Image (cartoon, rainbow, N blue to C red; front, side):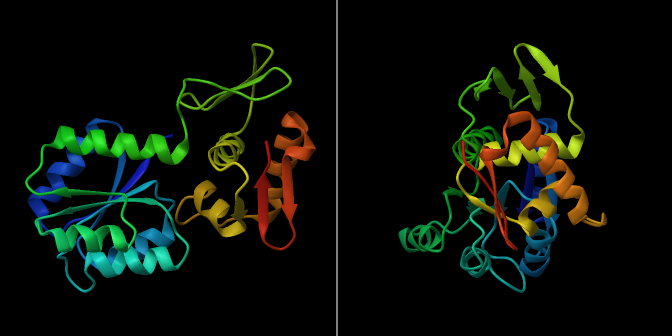
Amino acid sequence: MQRKILLLEDDLQLSDTIKQFLEHHEYEVLIAYNGYRAKDLIYEKHIDLMLLDIKVPYQNGFDLLDDVRKSGNMTAAIFITSLHSVEDVTKGFSVGCDDYIRKPFALKELLVRIESLLKKQFGIRENKIVLWDGLVYYPKEFQLMKNNQNIHLKTKEIKLLNIFIENPNQLLEYQKIFDALWDYGEEPNSASLRTYIKTIRNIIGKKYIQTVKNIGYRFVP
């Protein structure tokens, strides 16, 4: 599954250059040219990382990220900006950014910073994650195996398992799960989600996925 990156950048040429570069490295890039559009995408889509310019129309990057953090969204964020002062860097981190890169920058450096943050965010340190009872999960391949036998799961089921593994011991609200499993334009289905949960519980064990009534689920490995 491709990681989704939100790119907020009002310089059309630079935006297109970054988009093509990241797509070449197998990322999906969602483009916004102003703060309002970026905020819409953040709430419409499941986004894995945000690249935010600061001096953009309607709402600057500082205020945008401040609002996003106050809403409880802790998605990794990198400021990409021509603002170079120590005060600007300090403000960037104070509103919740994870990294700060000054223009002009090398695209390869941007890629290194993105990959470093994603590894930290998703905790993927090895090519496989050993669970229990002979279960092994391969995050790069989105594959679950038991005693060296592949376990067939539907696309949304393996996505759901991946979300749980990436977010151990965290309360995952229904809306966050809906945003991750259903693409924009698809209608989230609570009944289908319950079916996916049941399938995964039958495979990995019921006790590992807790139901938090009327709120969501928690994966407790």
